[in-house]
Length: 276
Image (cartoon, rainbow, N blue to C red; front, side):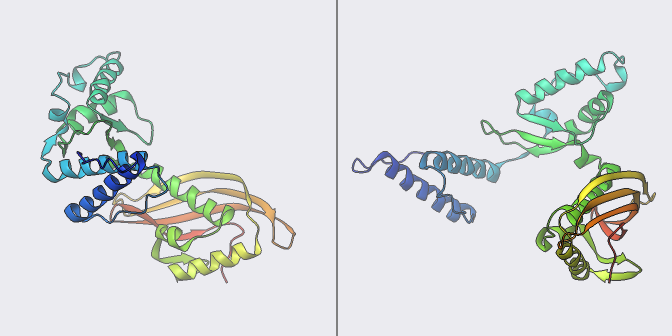
């Protein structure tokens, strides 16, 4: 962005003036409410604001384009025409071409090369994206956005929730979103605030506990992908707030329901953790 320099201003003052102008333009032209970035140096803030402004300018007029067209329509072979020993080499070649055009595919879980090659050439290439090209900006896709790995998601949520209860303070603002509106626990049904109260009481009398074992033995997902159960073994050790040593171990169970492509906990049973 061109800026008329005032010879009476120092370079830092000039940058701050330009930054204020960029913030004003972002607010007036794109309705952005700029957060306080005064902790940044004027140079860094200037670069950041210019990047944001360039992005918004391109995004406003960007057309939709297939990923295959975006990366220049490179030649490729269909996955079923490749011999097993050719797949990895072809996958790497396509990934290099994509990276050169600043497009990347990430995977949360591990998959064989044939699965990823087939996905890229049959699905990702047909997917539409914004036709925007900003130096240094890479467009990232994630395989699981197209093909959710429910087993992984359920295991991860189970691990996270157990650690949330036993090892760190419960935070209503963030932790409640993992729970369904109604949760079965200890033979009763609770709403989210009710479960929060129980967890806070437990944490008030226990110091953070050490998870010695957290082994998931079964993940059972209903064919409708609407319900799931996770079971396993859990052992914990630690102290009460007053100093008494404690040790809990046994089977645990979680029941999940799926809504709007997200799994929510709507029932659980944990050793050492009991309701009122």
